[in-house]
Length: 158
Image (cartoon, rainbow, N blue to C red; front, side, top):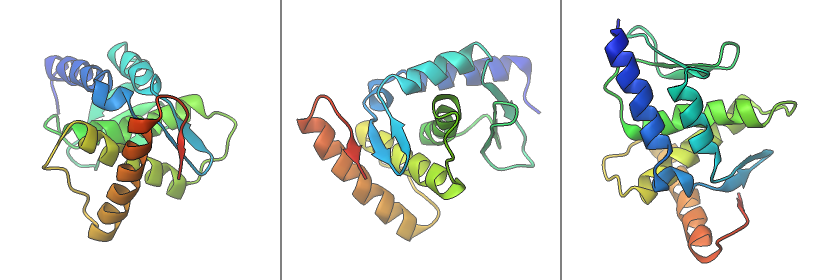
């Protein structure tokens, strides 16, 4: 179990990551979910202020529970892109209320977002367990990055 100091550090770290330009430049639409540039900073602020809760449970995998607005990590030593992935689920929950977002759509958006973050942040160690999923997520993320580089407004529709 993480100490209160470790939890404060994790919340602060998540807030910092979610306010980076690598996150703030994520914008795209996939199915009925649209991510805009301000959303990651919004959730970062919510995490820092414990409105979106963070907990560590070494017996569970990384996840987001919309029922109690809680992101669970398996440890305090997690990669930045994992924070982006789980924060994406919190963003969908917070900003798409009233919409039916399937689990498949939520996961697809989160994997593409974390891949786009990795490209934006020049993270070379990013991996996704399923190689086919990783290839697809990166192919889409590269298309989004190319669009966002040319277009300063609007969103790329996947």
